[in-house]
Amino acid sequence: RRSIGGYAEGVITPHPRVAFTLGARVDDNEAFGQFVTGRAGASLRPFDATRLRATVGNAFREPSFTENYSSGFPVGNPGLEPERTTSWDVGVDQSLLSDRVRLSHTGFAQRFVNMIDYEPSAAACGFNYCNVAEATANGLETEMQARSEQKSTEQPERQPDQKLGPADEGGDGR
Image (cartoon, rainbow, N blue to C red):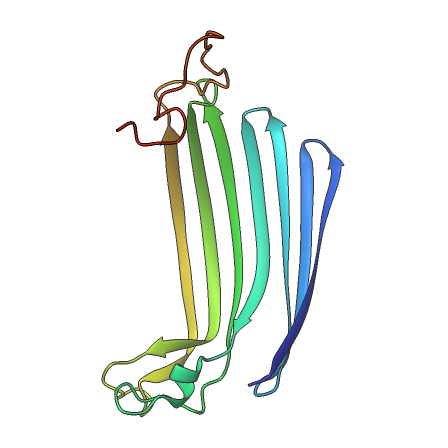
């Protein structure tokens, strides 16, 4: 299969606390035709330790050779259509305790059309890989990172006559 693509992305920062990202991609696939996809995002820092963010976009995925043409087990499906998806997410990132604790919370939703699914019994469409008409994936993600102490950028002082040991020179100290 021959596939040619190109993309462009731009970042606009109208203010140090505001950023917008826009991206577009064009793919020309000899088996499935032409697809135009894009993504847009925004980020806002209302306070030094707080970032609000959101993205929206769409995508496609062509079937792999295995999904189309495998034989034996599993059995590929030469009639598969490309998978298409539209997605969005919104979130907030918060730093606490002098950046020693970071919290992140994100909500997301994806809508799939012609999602490529594996069916072990091949009962759904006569093959092991089938297009599912529509599917969704929604959820929330929460993340927390914590450090026990603040990072130090200072290097330990060494006396001018102090010799480096093997461990200081990159050795293993043996």
